[in-house]
Image (cartoon, rainbow, N blue to C red; front, side):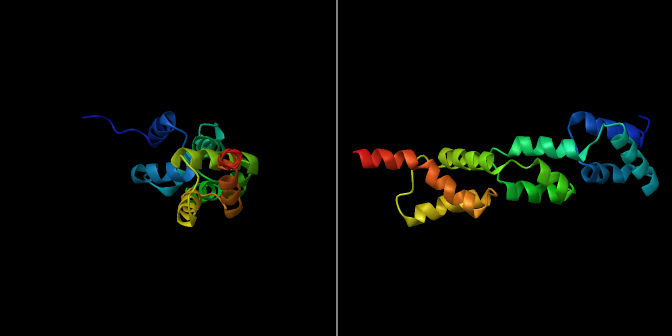
Length: 155
C-alpha cells in the first residue's frame, strides 16, 4: 500500500502540471486537508515561494484565450475563478488587440460578408457570445469585410 502524500506534495504535483489560481488550488486540495489552517498554510507557502501566483495564472489564461475571446468573457471567466478584479483589468488586452482578435475570429468562422440582415445578426451574435463588447463587434464587422466592399465597388 502506498503511503499518503502530504498536502504540500499534492500542491506541488498540481502546480508542476500547470499554472493554477489560488481558489482552484484550494478547491483541489480541500478533500485532502486535515484542517482549514493546514490548507491555508500550504497555500500561503506556495504563494510566498513564488510557486503559485494568481497574476501569473491570469496572464497565462489571457494569453491562451485572448485570440478567441473578448475582454468581457475573459474578465467574467477569471473572476469566476477567484482572480482579483484589479489584476484581471491590468492584464486584459487593449482595444486594438481585441479588435484584431474579433476581426480574425469572424473571418475564420464566416468566409464571406453577410448578404442580408439575418446573416449580419448571426455574425454579431457570434462575436457577442465570444465576449466582445458591442462597439468592438460593430467595428470588427465593418473592418473584416471592408476589403470585400472595395472589390464589389470596383467591379
